[in-house]
Each structure stands twice: as structure tokens, then as C-alpha cells.
Length: 226
Image (tube, rainbow, N blue to C red; front, side, top):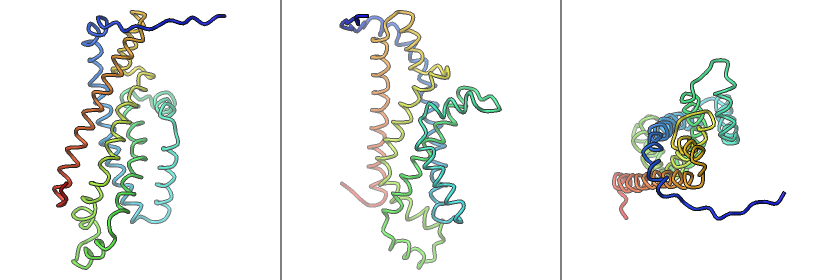
């Protein structure tokens, strides 16, 4: 069978007409990404502190958790929670759970590395001044570590946002799923995937801008200026 070659063209009229429909998926895309990133951060901070203070079996479990979830493809995790659970989760619930757990594993490594980068002498000074461990972490160590972690956190946020496109595989009506529906109806996937690619790019630009502002603000808070 001889393959057929053609030069794809972008149907700008179709893109413009379909834009309002595709944008209806924005709440799902941003909602899943935001909820997952927040929960992932909360879990990661807890795991990071436990890695420093918990008993050995707990630390072993967290290390296994981080290694295992960093090694599982996201689509496998989504299918596991949506199709494989004894209790049926909705597509939204399965998506949020999957991205929360996966992102928490990567974020734990980011926070662990950021904490390790803070001068250990500051801990000794804090204890000498009478700080408890959690006071020291909250007021001295974590603010400095967070500045170091912000660029990596921005990258994870972008990865989570782009990864939400996989939720189309379990019928979440995000921007990718809606673009795919239009592409199937109009027999023009090329134009619709160009549109959805631009939308993800613009959303990532917003995350990047927020990351820069957060870096500038945090540097000022810890007394470092450019």
C-alpha cells in the first residue's frame, strides 16, 4: 500500500468559530491542574518533613512512594484509578487523585533538595536561640528553601497543566477533548490540534509569568535583591 502524502493547511475560520466551544474546557483543565498542584504541594511538604523527623519505616515508605510514583506513566495511574478501583470514581475525581499523587512525588524531591541547600549552620543557630524544629522550619529554613524551589515548582505546575490533556482518555471534557471532538466532526484534526497547542502554550506563559513574580517577591522577603 502506497502511503498518501499531503500538505496540511490551517483552517483559521474553523479555529475562530470553534474557539468558544473549546474554551468551555478551560475550567476542567485549570481546575484539575490547580487542585492537583495544591494537594501535591501539601503532601510533598508533609513528606519532606517526615523524611527528616520520622522513624525509619516511615522514611522507607516515603522513599518507596516517591520512587514508585515517579516511575509510573501518568496514563497508567489515570486508568488505574478510573477503571481499576473497587469503588467507581468519577473522571474528575480520578484525574485529581492521579495528578495529586504523581506531582507530590516530584515535589517531594524538589523540597528535599531545596532544604538540603540551606546552610546547616542556620539550624544550629536557630536551636541555640530556642526555636523548636517546626518554628525553625516555618520561620527560617523553609522561606529560604522555597526561593530556591520556585523555578522547579513552576516546571512541575506546567507539567501538571499539560498532563491534564491525558484526562481526555477518560472522557473529561477539557480543552483537548473538545478540540478532538471538533476535529472529528470537521475532519480537520490538524487545525484543532494547532489551536489546542496554542492554548496550552498561552496558559504555560501565564504560569511562567507568575513564577517570575513569585521569585521577585520571595527574594525581597528574604532580603535578596537583583
